[in-house]
Image (tube, rainbow, N blue to C red; front, side, top):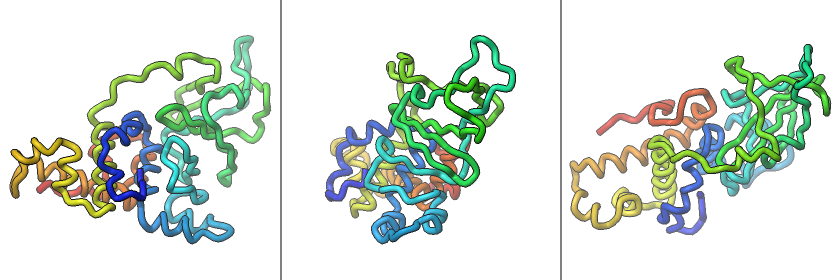
Length: 253
């Protein structure tokens, strides 16, 4: 979110889009909140590749853009990368390569070894590594990181825009973590975070020095800080979204 207004973190509805983000999109949400990253963006001059490497990027991206608008170019190849190669033995029903038929808002860049195409669909990014010999209209094959064939959704395919499944508890954890992180960066207290997440009535009855509610909110704030300070890199890998993705897990109270 990173809205400059002090109280912008309070509405839970502002974080609903987080419930459908995939790993790379979540990684960006944590990185763009890092004060040092935001400082590097403000002070950028000319070539920023060296500075961007520090953050795991090919180039700096505007931290004012959330995951629905930004196109950060990650240096590490994630489990979400799909390789597209020419089909050496095409059949009559072979898939033909056409970048314009891939659904989503697209961004094309060279990451040093090959061209990478990213496409934003509602709630997630898809990343495709394009083989050097690939040309428009050429029969092609799609291969995932685990060797599984995977076809990208096409622009005229209805399935990619239909309703999505109910968000998991793990995704609700990410939304609450980001909200708690924004609150702490804005100078809010743990009690104020609890009131935003659970309501004033619940906090009035359950908040005390050794309460489970206070411990839960404290863990959210600690988790957000760890993910922002480098733990976001774990979100680029194949592990499922959840509490076990911390690079340096915080201790339970």
